[in-house]
Length: 262
Image (cartoon, rainbow, N blue to C red; front, side, top):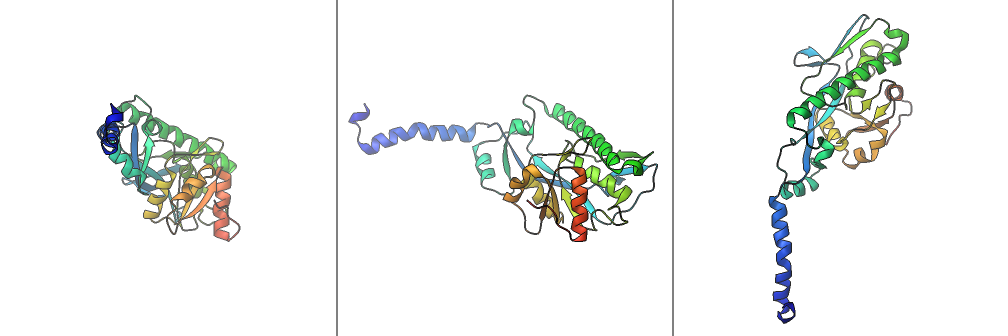
């Protein structure tokens, strides 16, 4: 019985189940995914030799700046994530540990997830075109837009696609570039009526943006706190809620007027 054991022996005996639990946790796969900063792509430029944005039916501009959409790179749905991976991710600023279900729909295969992400990207592109042309109104009559960005899935590039269309057709509205010649990055979904929605992995996307030369990052307003948490030096955050508000903020950035901040 425990009452007959010396204190050191009793403590050792009590520790055995805890040690066994840690050992089991260290070996067992856990329901998490580990993410890190992914690639960025300039929607005003080319991807695999083809323009990301192709416009017909109206004269277009050749902007001098960049509008970089950002991504995260996550372990696959079938990856084995153990306690050591999770612990490492929690203590690193260039990694994030997320519930697997938050990254991938539960129970889906890799192929199904890829198909889902491609579908979400196409829906996002359609919404971006509608939002941009709706914002431009009569300036976008008879315009046809095609978007092509290989090897990227999901809806989080919607805002950047819409801004790219506006920049190529109208710039800042006064003859200049919407970017002011800067390298501007960002993230955010968009609806057909121009509302910007939140996405995941914002703190990792800011790191990807700064790594690839961006000095300004457009962040959905609801995710300001997360973006500020690990903000790289030299990167300015601008919170956004709508396409119109985003365009106004970029114009203000160029003219020196007040710009929203997190």
